[in-house]
Length: 365
Image (cartoon, rainbow, N blue to C red; front, top):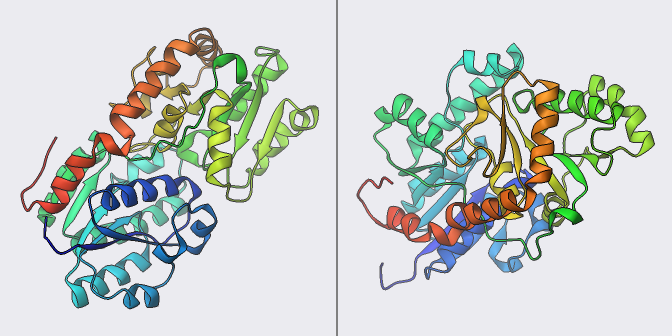
């Protein structure tokens, strides 16, 4: 590294409460390697922040006031990111690293996952933003084998240096509850077609009607608003207290963490994803998952981190899978926690990330 201390910013211009952990992990990696680092993010992240206020800013005028910036790590697609990247590259010749969470697959992949034509068109527009950000960046980080392979198939012509590094987190688990202290079967995160939220609700209704899990409640914790059909289906059980809903507004990081720590199992049985931020966050708190065969990744092993179900979402298979997790909770919980520390905890990949940022050669794992 240079003798002169480098200056860096970690950037996310759109707000999603689940993303703050990634920003913080990036900030810590850079700061702990003697880089003068600042946070440049959406103002709503300010309420979640644990970093001194003088190192946090929210608009391009404050960015400009910092003067020359040597390095910027951008997270997640935003049109504002394009403007910021152009500004940094032109005026400061900043090295820009883009964490490319969701490389574009195909229209058919999103339609098959349950998205309508309008939502698929929006995804197509986001993919254009992503493509421009890749073109404007110097280097690209891909967080999973699937995203890495998709990048090599569809984006290799951009001639960018790229690396596979899992989504990074700080360790936020102060205390991890054992199975006897957890009473929620949970859906945590965005309500979306490809997350199979409708299947989770169908399962919850069947389970409550048949008294399958009398010790447990079903928790839905999301910043989304529940779709009308699912709200109607759940209303009697919300009233009875069998279903607990937290919806319609962003949750603090502390509240999100509490939900993971109170869950005996978390729904990750998505119809598709490149990689899920729910998986590593669950692992952080030693919380097993239900994963679908269509959402299986290199980070999950059946009967080690939870249970894989068929993508047909058979009700009885779901019942058996949740029972299996409850019975084997302590084993699965230890495996989840161990995988978090070796795969998603930022210190596990700190050297690889820094070598990639500082080295001019392509880096692969």
